[in-house]
Image (cartoon, rainbow, N blue to C red; front, side, top):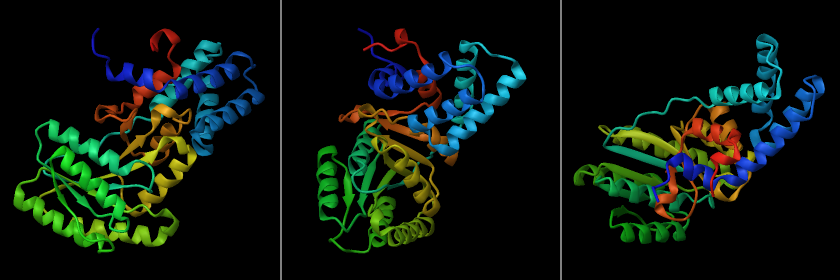
Length: 308
């Protein structure tokens, strides 16, 4: 049996999101006239599919305009217009990453941040890159211990400090060590205590300043890890972190276990930040490259395209 393509793996693993979205949208399109009630119901359906208010209104208004201009009114034509509108919405350019690079990984506690860092480290090491991790979540001893365990398992360097130490000092030391050892990818873990939001954001801003000041010669890439099962709450988190740390990319975890994956469209559409990876399982290889165009295509795909 031939190895599945990334698109096929996405279709196979994200069936909850796909089936939920497709059923809701087709129910609106196939059983309603294209009047004001139709657009109102479509907007409500998109919101219930976790696309959020702002994105749902934007899609509905653009569809109304497209139907008016193109005169396309058949059910198939309307679905095709919807697909094209959403595909256009997620067309966001990814920032290229050059080596050596400092990856600053942010996100609230419980989203799978440390596990994601471990998967990224394994991926980069498998590609032949020299990798180091920095345990800058110094407020949770468990976070440092977990990252230390992963570093030993993957066989990569780690820079850490005692619990309660200044996270910025850990990052400072890690940059110096990375430069001295010829590290190509330095991945920095950070705290995620969103209940203490103001202090957390100030802390992240301080870490960013240290990276900008000390990381001469390194590319900088800021990644946010989000839990897809939280739906629109993930979008709120993304906006909060983007205000404090200019985000270059996003990782969505637990995409295989949720019907709320539609939030990916509103995150990309509203923040104009690409989703770079999605987690579709527990294994290292289950952190896969995300293609937003393929994701939208999957939402509208026929059942013959999605093979279990």
